[in-house]
Amino acid sequence: MADQPHFVIVGGGTAGWLAAFILSDKARRLKLGARVTVVESSKIPTVGVGEGSTAALRVLMQYFNLNEFEFFRETGATFKLGIRHKDWRHIGHSYDGPIDDPHQVVKAPAGAPSDYLNVFCVAAGRKLQDMHLFGPLLERKKAPYARKDDGTLLPLGPFHHAFHFDQARVGKFLKARASNVDTIDASVSGLERDAETGYIRALILDDGTRLAGDFFVDATGFRKRLIVQELAAPWISYAKELPVNRALPFWIDIKPGEEIANYTLAWALESGWMWQIPTQERYGCGYVYSDAFKTPDEARLEVERVLGHPIEVRDDIRFEIGRLATPWLGNCLAVGLAASFLEPLEATSIHGSIVQLMLFADNYLKNPEEMTETDRVDYNRRFGRQVDDFRTFINTHYVTERDDTPFWRDVRAERLHDETRQRLALWSKEMPRREHFPSYLGGLPHVETQLHYPVLDGLGLLDPEVARAEMARDPKLRAFARDTVDSLVREYRAAADKALGHAEFLAHMRSLG
Image (cartoon, rainbow, N blue to C red):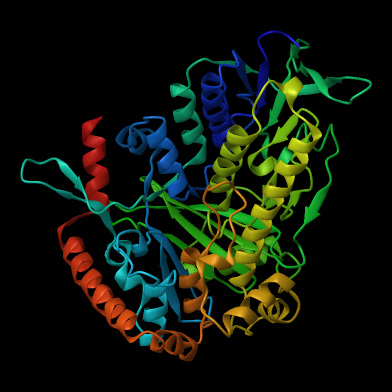
């Protein structure tokens, strides 16, 4: 290996450029003297169907001192303050899941169990969203900013929001700000591998040139160009518990003067569900469905019927839900859609990519010749547990009262994972606790109760009697929780009164450019 290790990322887009940022930054801090090269082809098209993040992307942007207002202007981004789930429990029922956590701003009494505010709301029959800052903002389609007397903007509250955006433009935004990263416009036509170890030694590019490297990152999306096509990494399917396998993407234009949603809409339909994700110009939409129950033409006709107008289908996307058993194989690490794919119900893709890259950078990044099989086994174990947790969380959304179509009857009868059943059995006897989700990611964010409570409560899967029994054990805590929730509801409704409308905020952002 050369004195200056060469890290080669194949594939740009959001995952590839996140990898470039995180790995080059960590390599610099470790004084590895590494070179980082991104190989991406301008000939490979993308479909701008809209994508959502979690708050992890904003935390990362702040770490790298990326200007958020520039991000809004250059990517067509909008706020994502939560997810609205429509018709999941039964037709005509909706519930919201704001992504902020009021437990962060309230100092709990000594000895108070985690999530006690959630437990109180369930016990009292209160809407969970009401004690969230993002709850009233979401209902009124407002931005988490107010305008001060001098015209400047003031953020409302300490919570990190998320974004909606066109993912192709996010890759360009990151690329324009990546320093000390080389780029090559090409695609991979083959590999040169070590005959003894099987490690990748060089890429053969489509113009016939050879690009040598010491460590390779596969960010080629569904194509899995290195990790599967060349290295044959095995795939673990989630098709049994997550039955959708096809997507019909389309756009809906935003009319002039129309307020813009600040949430992802996940609308349960006859054979799956439809997403609607706002950018500044349009809603990126798609029907994620099972083709065992509906043909593409039938899916299109259903969407047109529920929307009340024709649509122009942008693509026909077939996919397999699951993950790699070994996303780190030899000297190749798969990230993003090359490593796993779950239906985009809870914005797990970019969140997972960020966490996985930070996990790798913080715990395993070093000179490639010093990386060991023990490192790979440990990373793959943690990666697998993270994506399995995503699977179980999404599977929980299908524990529903719906039995009005063959798809929903099949889901109810056949599709629940054993881990989903085990967790629901536990939560029928005690309320969900943060302690039920042990950390295996070295302190990085993982799926825990704050994400589960809106879904479990919205689907009617939490027993108020269990919650009331837990609150009754400590009357002082119950009184404190009641007063705290009442105070938060008043404070956040007042904040929503002052907040800018979402479209007004976005117009202000554009005026600054």
